[in-house]
View 1: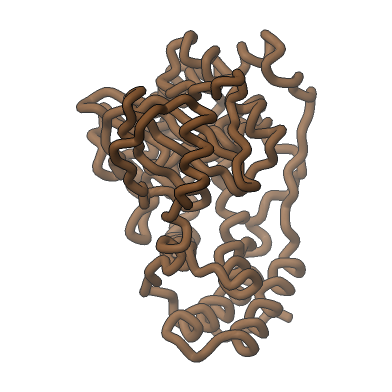
View 2: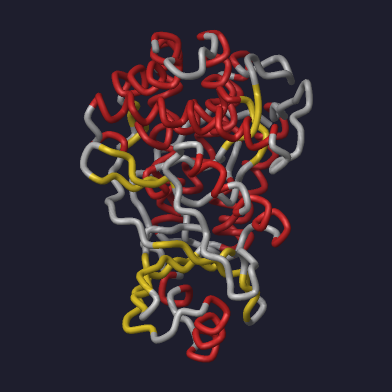
Length: 360
């Protein structure tokens, strides 16, 4: 049931307590990986804490310097398919680091019940979107356009399956969103311990129920997104981008390649790159979209539709709280904090944000 009461917003983050358990590699497992990839002696290994879903290490070995990745949230079949595309993308000029095969020729090593892949080490830095110059922001948009174009060519070469003529996108009903919020509110009461995060989550859920009811008429009405669609990366955000000076050195983490509306990926990338500190950097949103449209002439109406769909998805989605209260995983609490703050700012300025997407 919708409520008129509005609670306070989340303003505090929570430290990831799971890093210590994710950062270890048993010596026996490392030994199997050394043999699988033919690495020789490992002089040094260092856990890379930037990743969220998967775990990554930097390895200095007698065979060279590499990035080792343990994939935990993608099926083996999908992982092998995605990794098999990267060499073609690299040959097409997309900045990627193609995987190193095992000595048996596989792109994935299955060791100790896990899926592991290895990449040549790429020098560079992760730079937040709001810290990029406008020139680099526009360049990033163009890179995304070329990425989409190259994935389309990979599809044409048979490396990816064909794209259906039409696709649909679920639009969560207000009633379903309120139901999810109420279930999670009960979970906070039943499973929480009265922490600052529990209190903030309870207040945010109460506020969200009111927002959903208040703005339900602004939700997307059609299940068919506007604009073209095709194969996309799925997670273009600063942790998955390496910059070397003014140049984009590599796009990382190709676990989520899937067919989506192009406007969906443009909108999501703009949000995670330029929706920082609870506000959108609208000048950078426009520069990014302009760069993308210099390569892929997506209609402004499609971009506005993509932005509106993403806004409603953020309004009706609670995945970070589901991880926290349903799985006991607090790794993404700070993302809920950031997304919640941005959602309120975005909702108050819905037209301004969409104008920025249309202006590019």
